Amino acid sequence: YDDFVRWRISSSHTITEEMVQESWRLRRELIAEATAIISGPLHAFAFPTAAIIPPKLSDVQDMEAFKATNFRALRNTSTFNFLDGCSMSLPSTAPGEAPVGFMLSMMHGHDTDLFSISAGVETIFQSQMK
Image (cartoon, rainbow, N blue to C red; front, top):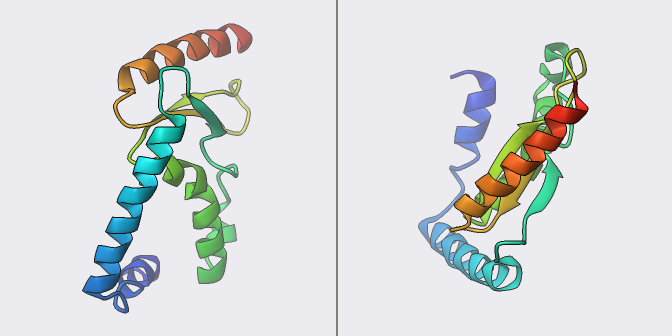
């Protein structure tokens, strides 16, 4: 395996079945709590899709630099993914600028609401990028 792939695979070797089951139980509880608090057609959350702009390949050749960069790059998308929510990333930069996405997220079951809100936001972005 590639060293970066090997790192992800080998990190799972210390996880027991009990740990997996407990993680799933806690995740279900957290999803239920989050859904009770933030669910609804007007509860969309906005984040940058990634907390960083794409790094140069030369900046992530070292394993520790890769891990830190990978964590920052996936931090925002992981939040609603973990909560079993839905998200949509919209391009939000003008041509020639560093690529940045504007992510809208909602809880599970609100996909149609998310599509509607995203379409409105996308229209605004497109009018501003001309």
